[in-house]
Amino acid sequence: MRKNVLGDGCFMFLLVMGAIALIARAIGVAIIAVLVVVLSIIALVVTYKILQAIYHVFNPKAKAAYLDNKAKLAEESRRQQEQEKAEAEARKTREEADKLRMALEHQRHRDGDKQDTPYTYQIGKHGNESLAIRYGIANQEKKVREYWYYAKGGERKRNPDTDTIYYEPATTIRLQKTGRVGDNLYDVRLTDFRNRKAKAVIEVGTEYVKTFYPLEDRWFERHADLETTLKGNGSFTLKELATFHVQKVVGA
Image 1: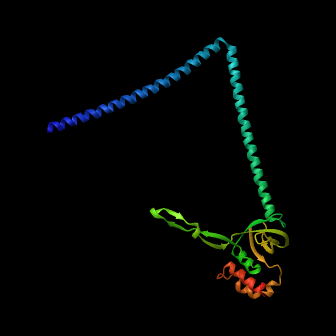
Image 2: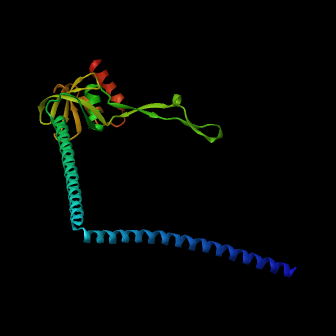
Image 3: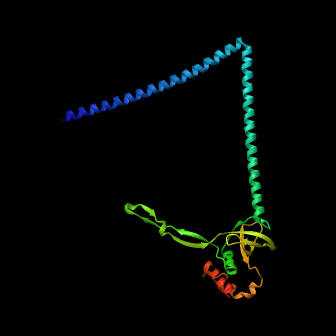
């Protein structure tokens, strides 16, 4: 039995060595084939150059024509590269000019005392609260809280019918300036609120509506209690602030 084990081991060793030898031979043949191809290409190129040189020695006109054609091709290539470079630079210059023109148009539209079309400004908590208290307008944006559940098999699915709709204070407001009435103070129309008239404080050079002033200065005297109670009171939503305005001012 021990002899059989030794015999099987020798057989497996010889089989592995034979396989390695075949692989090495195949690799060697492949390397030789590649070398033959490379050397053949080099030989053809060298032979062509030698024959070309001999031909040019006995035919100087052909050599001159060859060199002249080579120089022309090089010159055409140089001119083409210069033209492509010039076109790329001109295209870049036009794009930069277009960007500058659009930026200037955007700035003129934003900072103009009177606007032909509405502009979307940013607005924060103070601006939204002043709009709600002094005009009864809740500048809110609709949000959707998606409802997802796990179906049979563990697949995650959404059911739009059970989504939750809620509202948050908007971070932007669309309005159109109709005229300047003071330092950074403008008469405006609130585009998304039936073009309601209002007075907005917008600093020149900014994208931000700081606050809204009432249409009449006597507002602060007539409704001082409303201003004192609601202004900066974080316990009310914008909708509630707007409702207080309606109840106090419109319902009075």
